[in-house]
Image (cartoon, rainbow, N blue to C red):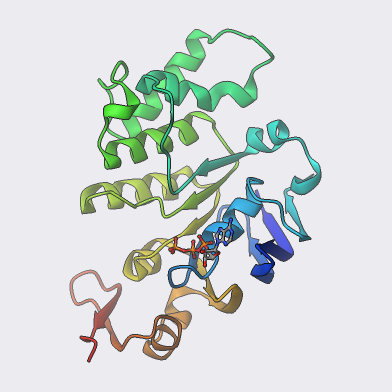
Length: 255
Ligand SMILES: Nc1ncnc2c1ncn2[C@@H]1O[C@H](COP(=O)(O)OP(=O)(O)OP(=O)(O)O)[C@@H](O)[C@H]1O
């Protein structure tokens, strides 16, 4: 499913945190949103999944006018893996993942055998089978992150928004999560910090700085030492990784 966010402006505390940004994610594309801390990535994503209200702009997901639709209609097609996933109340892992089924149910409808099968399969995909009865709050940061991804998988969305989904994860699970999402083969928009992983997994990248889009393109055309230097204020050299053939970035020490 295709996402078109157009001319988004988000104003918080009298400041335009997101300043006239347009983003398009074509059918089944994995699109990365990169940029330094505080540039507005999370705010833009939150305005797309409607946790923050934009001052201006429009968002369409397929034919759905996201900003003028009920959250329930949006949640039937849009899954979200947010940056901070702490809760005040405790739930078991199974209950957390079952929540992914809620948008597909009628009011007070009970969980079916099919729902439980979908949950089991989602937990298997993130290697958390056997964790069903564990309390969510007792999990490590990485385990929590994988539960939240399992919840999004169980939701069976047509589009996924992810805010730094590899936060807290060791390298195995970073690779696992990005591979799972890639294999879901649905449109995905993800804020990412690791530029080498972004280059490896993303079909297209948007670069933000101080609330504005400063560049966009495929990882290969976009990730130059000049752009990375300008956006992140660091020195680096780009090379072709001799083992993977992928894009490598050698960061030089700050003086
Ligand atoms: N409710 C708010 N009121 C005022 N300013 C806010 C509010 N929420 C966020 N900001 C500010 O907006 C800016 C953008 O924040 P945001 O979380 O979107 O950045 P980010 O690019 O996701 O950063 P990071 O990479 O550190 O997660 C920051 O300067 C932040 O302090």
